[in-house]
Length: 464
Image 1: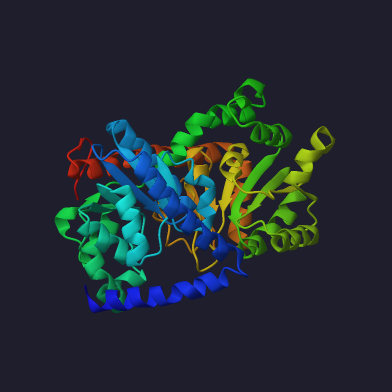
Image 2: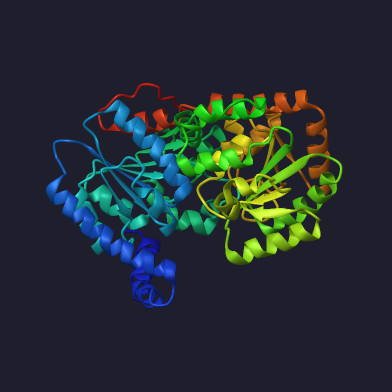
């Protein structure tokens, strides 16, 4: 074991009592501590009753919700290709609890603390044939102990930006031994693949498999019939039978918000930095055009919602919260200029009512949120200049399905021009949808790479 890894494990072991102490007063920490304890017990119970050692088991780990959705598509592809496979799914963030039971795994829970005791207990219970990390997160002790237990190791749907700390001298000195353990890396693109060689992954272990997020989003849209819903809404026709494919609460929102007479901007995953740029512009444009905005903050906390309402009032925009509108039902049919989405889990559906989308995060250092959801529905996308973390945004802009806005002037110009020229709007939407369609298939390629190393089908795998 390398010295940096020994120091890491010692430090993490020493920190665990502090985490337990913090759990007394911090809700998320409490959920994480309790969740890991309960998950390990669940793995041991399932391993004793349901683990069939004559069948391969793939342990898929995703840090949070976004990666969990990518994992969901890859898990489905694994099952399509190999019916006898068993799947375990783990996550790190408490936010992923809400999707853990929906990803298609046989057993799911928190990843154990990255120290020998908990990791060995999880491995003894699950007895994985392979362990696949999704996107970026690779844990030193888990990889070491899983390798000793005979499991194959993979990083799938992998990204590594040029400015990643992993590529720094300090990052490489600590992580190279971990990355050398990997049997396979499925990178989202050629440039990301090349960077993994700099981290010590052997060239022959790296493949360009693409981004399974496109598969997950496309499959969800197809399952919910959102393309048909969008077509009927845009034509102003009867949508009732099309809405039958949606959950009841989502269908109620669509009935409330449909209005083909108004140009609708859906602004998703916004932060205060986005709203400072966008809201004053909408106040100006609204005086001249039938434009409305549906705003879904990334974190709809009470303080954020209150601040957003004050900003809308200063811009002269009539506003209401979606929850109150749904509760009022028909009494709320006069839809205001701005609708604030005050709940999570519905944004990906609401993009279907948009003429134009704005995706937040591009005016803050943490980076842009996903542009794939609106693009897959054929909705052109605006986003801020700080999008270096999102390769798909750059490609979308290059293909004409998305537009970088440097400030309020760009936002105003794009809204005005696309509202005035519906053929240009349609062309941009078609370019966005075409790009997403071309990128699908990555879930199958990631799954095939794993199964190839386990002796399963390798159909559809491409190398670098």
